[in-house]
Each structure stands twice: as structure tokens, then as C-alpha cells.
Image (cartoon, rainbow, N blue to C red):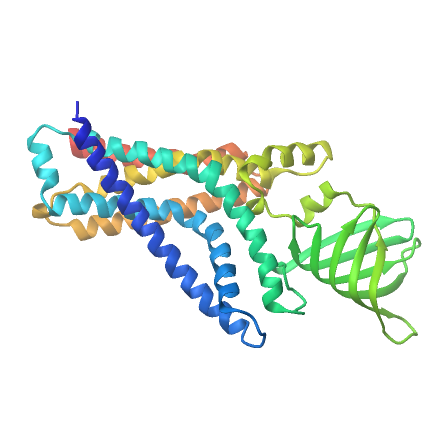
Length: 363
């Protein structure tokens, strides 16, 4: 058995390397986002501290996607440093096997993944919502202030006693309860076009949307501006969440209730199910990254070829990330079960690293 002191030493070296990579990337992204946001807010009289807080609150959710790469790079740095300083050589001479090198890092990665899923993920979702409100103060009267930009936006069709309406939102807030950059096309019960409405924002209230700072375009009449306008709707909160909410913004502990609500309402919950499975599988995905890193970084420097093995490890991590994206897209399209989509990359990465380590250690 590996001595407890040596186990703690390997575990702390691994944890320190991962945290150094994670914090370094975190600060780099925060600094870059701060500079870009500061340029965007140059036309408004806002405090630099407010801009810094906005950037600081936005980045944690981005770093969730970077965590597996931080573990991969941190593990390679840890083992390469131990090898370069001949600590692995001494440990080998004392009868310590590669599996005993890797075991402390596996346990630490598992614990880091559990903390990332159960604590860090809900915290990052809360901070992201706060960043949207702070961004609203920075942007002033910007049409998309306070909302999450979503590229081409969302489309949804609704029907009420007044007829049909097609709503396009450029951005959403609070899981779709608030919308920004609104364009509405309304039709009478017979299906004839009535008017087009453009509004700065919309909020879902019982039985209607409340449109703020709207402009109404109707045939045969000049455009008219209204501060507030009510648009009837039969959409419920659950239907709005399914149309406008993104699963990545839902905290881990709330995902089961979102899945249940969507299923009870007869709506698709594939995105929420996939996100839940991804978060559950995250600790084991980090373990797979450790095994991949160990398989390419336990080689002694005097044998040469270390650079090629490191590049191979980076390539393997990237391919594993691509595989996770492909399986995720297949799951969202309901062509693959969410559990299979989440756990397949974990199994591929873990088995690959395990087989390579087994070959290197036992021939």
C-alpha cells in the first residue's frame, strides 16, 4: 500500500495544479470580458466597479465548460513536473506503481466533480442572473438590457380568444418570464393579419404579456407608440420555460422539478434531461480526464517523446469534447437517450486512459 503521506502529497500536487490552471483561465477570461464590457459601456456613466462585478458574475458559468480541460491540463502538468524532478523515479524505485500515482488524483477529481455539480453549478446560475441585472444598469436604455442574447432569437406561436399571435424574442431573462427585443405579429380569429408590434421588453403575467415601450404598426394607420400594452395569451409558465429557457441556466437542484413540470404539461424535456445527466456524470468525466492525462504524462523524460505524448493527450481531450457535443446534439434531437449521450464520452475516455495505462504498466 502507498503510504498515507505520499498519497496526500500526490493529491495536493494534483489539486494545486488543477486550481492553478482553473484560476489562471478564470482571471484571463474575466480580464478580457471586463475590457470588452468597459468599451461597450463607454457611452454610459457607470462605475468601473459595476463593470468588474458584471464580468465577475458572468464568467463562472463559462468556466463550467472549461473545468474538464483544467483537470486534463492540470493533471498533465502535475505528472510531468513530478517526472522532471525525478520524484516519480524515486517512487518507482520504492515499489509504487502507476495505479498508485493515479489513485489520489482520481479521488480528488471525483470530489471536485461532486462539488462542481452540487455547489458550483447552482452558484454560477445565480451569479449569471445577477450579472444580467447589472448589465441592465450598464446598458441604460439599450433594447436588450438585462437579457441574455441568443443570436437569432426565439419564435413561439400562441392562440387566444382574440386570435393568433407569433412572437419573436431576441433575448430572454428569468427562464423566459421576461423577454427582450420583441416583435409580435397578430392575426384575428379568421387568420387575417391585424398588426405588427415591436417592443423593448415583455413580461409574462397571468393571462397576458405586458409589453413595455411598444410601437404598433397597423394597416391604413400611422404607427403609434404606447408605454405599456397588454397582449392576451394562453401560455403557461411551463410552456414559456420550454420555449425560451435554456437548460444550462437551470440550477442542478431544480432540474428534476423542471423535467417533471415539462412532462406533466406534455412538453419535450430532452434538453433538461440531458443537462441533468451531464451534471450527474461530471465527476466521472473528470476522472476520465485524469486517466487520459496520466496515460500520456507518466513517461520519464529520459525516454524522450514527451512533447508528442502531451500533444496526443490534448488531442484526445479535444476529441472527447467533440464527442460529447455530438452526442448532446443527438440527444436534443431525440435521436439518442439522454443517459447514453451523457455517459458515452465518459466511458470512452475512461476506457481509453485505462487501457493505455494498463499497457504501459503491465505490458
